[in-house]
Amino acid sequence: MLSYVYRSKKRPETYLYLAKRDQFDSVPEALLNVFGTPEFVFFINLKGKKQLARVDKETVLAALDSQGYFFQPPPNKTIDQLVLASDMTLSSKESDND
Image (cartoon, rainbow, N blue to C red; front, side):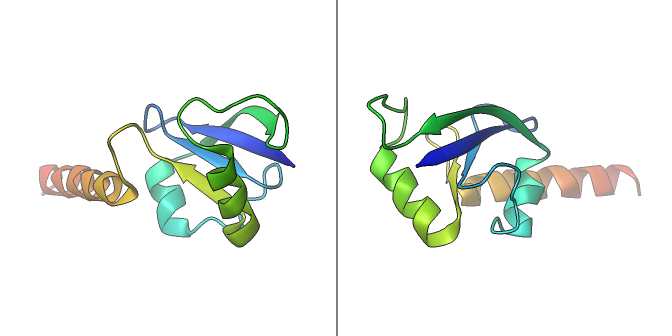
Protein backbone atom coordinates (compact mmCIF):
# COMPACT_ATOMS: atom_id res chain seq x y z
CA MET A 1 0.00 0.00 0.00
CA LEU A 2 1.32 3.42 -0.95
CA SER A 3 1.20 6.33 1.45
CA TYR A 4 1.73 9.96 0.52
CA VAL A 5 3.71 11.95 3.07
CA TYR A 6 3.36 15.69 3.65
CA ARG A 7 5.33 17.95 5.96
CA SER A 8 4.01 20.94 7.81
CA LYS A 9 5.40 24.32 6.83
CA LYS A 10 4.26 25.68 10.23
CA ARG A 11 5.51 22.91 12.50
CA PRO A 12 9.01 21.40 12.14
CA GLU A 13 9.19 17.59 12.19
CA THR A 14 5.42 17.28 11.79
CA TYR A 15 4.07 14.96 9.08
CA LEU A 16 0.79 13.79 7.66
CA TYR A 17 0.46 10.44 5.85
CA LEU A 18 -2.44 10.00 3.43
CA ALA A 19 -3.87 6.94 1.72
CA LYS A 20 -4.47 8.97 -1.46
CA ARG A 21 -2.38 11.81 -2.81
CA ASP A 22 -3.82 15.26 -2.16
CA GLN A 23 -7.01 13.80 -0.62
CA PHE A 24 -7.39 15.74 2.63
CA ASP A 25 -11.18 15.20 3.07
CA SER A 26 -10.66 12.65 5.87
CA VAL A 27 -8.37 14.94 7.88
CA PRO A 28 -10.24 16.97 10.52
CA GLU A 29 -10.33 20.70 9.80
CA ALA A 30 -8.90 21.50 13.25
CA LEU A 31 -5.88 19.31 12.55
CA LEU A 32 -5.30 20.96 9.16
CA ASN A 33 -5.49 24.38 10.83
CA VAL A 34 -2.74 23.39 13.27
CA PHE A 35 -0.75 21.61 10.56
CA GLY A 36 -0.87 24.49 8.08
CA THR A 37 -0.45 24.14 4.34
CA PRO A 38 0.76 20.59 3.61
CA GLU A 39 3.87 20.25 1.46
CA PHE A 40 4.25 16.94 -0.40
CA VAL A 41 7.54 15.24 0.48
CA PHE A 42 7.47 11.68 -0.90
CA PHE A 43 5.47 8.49 -1.20
CA ILE A 44 6.37 5.17 0.35
CA ASN A 45 5.22 1.59 -0.06
CA LEU A 46 4.22 0.61 3.46
CA LYS A 47 4.21 -3.06 2.49
CA GLY A 48 7.84 -2.82 1.32
CA LYS A 49 11.01 -3.58 3.31
CA LYS A 50 12.02 0.02 4.02
CA GLN A 51 11.36 1.15 7.61
CA LEU A 52 10.11 4.54 8.72
CA ALA A 53 12.35 6.62 10.98
CA ARG A 54 10.10 7.38 13.96
CA VAL A 55 6.95 5.32 13.59
CA ASP A 56 6.03 1.70 13.03
CA LYS A 57 4.63 0.99 9.55
CA GLU A 58 1.84 -1.14 11.02
CA THR A 59 0.63 1.82 13.09
CA VAL A 60 0.51 3.98 9.95
CA LEU A 61 -1.27 1.24 7.97
CA ALA A 62 -3.89 0.78 10.68
CA ALA A 63 -4.59 4.53 10.82
CA LEU A 64 -4.81 4.80 7.03
CA ASP A 65 -7.25 1.88 6.93
CA SER A 66 -9.45 3.22 9.73
CA GLN A 67 -9.39 6.98 9.16
CA GLY A 68 -7.63 7.69 5.85
CA TYR A 69 -4.68 9.56 7.39
CA PHE A 70 -1.95 9.28 10.00
CA PHE A 71 -0.64 12.31 11.90
CA GLN A 72 2.96 12.25 13.11
CA PRO A 73 3.74 15.07 15.58
CA PRO A 74 7.31 16.08 16.40
CA PRO A 75 9.18 13.90 18.90
CA ASN A 76 7.85 14.30 22.46
CA LYS A 77 4.77 16.27 21.33
CA THR A 78 1.11 15.35 21.00
CA ILE A 79 -1.62 16.88 18.87
CA ASP A 80 -3.10 18.39 22.06
CA GLN A 81 0.18 20.17 22.81
CA LEU A 82 0.33 21.52 19.26
CA VAL A 83 -3.27 22.76 19.41
CA LEU A 84 -2.61 24.44 22.76
CA ALA A 85 0.52 26.14 21.42
CA SER A 86 -1.38 27.22 18.32
CA ASP A 87 -4.24 28.63 20.43
CA MET A 88 -1.78 30.52 22.65
CA THR A 89 -0.05 32.02 19.60
CA LEU A 90 -3.40 33.04 18.15
CA SER A 91 -4.52 34.65 21.45
CA SER A 92 -1.30 36.64 21.78
CA LYS A 93 -1.68 37.93 18.20
CA GLU A 94 -5.29 38.94 18.93
CA SER A 95 -4.28 40.81 22.11
CA ASP A 96 -1.48 42.57 20.19
CA ASN A 97 -4.14 43.91 17.81
CA ASP A 98 -6.25 45.38 20.66
